[in-house]
Image 1 (cartoon, helix red, strand yellow):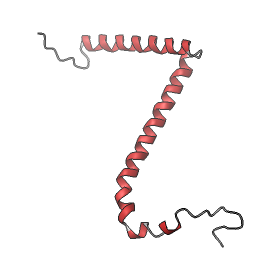
Image 2 (image 1 turned 90 degrees about the horizontal axis):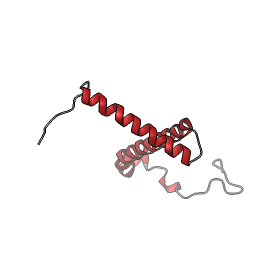
Image 3 (image 1 turned 60 degrees about the vertical axis):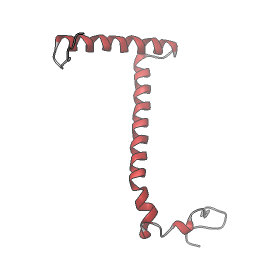
Length: 96
């Protein structure tokens, strides 16, 4: 059995990167054609989806990190009695 660790800068590494880039481009071009859109529009769409997914993941992580603080800190619970209040109901506002 061959045992070879591919390192950045190796000829094999560069060949693999080049092949992978070609495969990705062909795949994306095929998808763009199937969706009747341009290659660049597809890439923008995919990148936008990836960014949105990353942002949602970051927000979820932040919310989970703060959950215990919000569940136990008295000063953060001061307004929970107002949960469910409809401040935009007809004739009511925060001043009333």
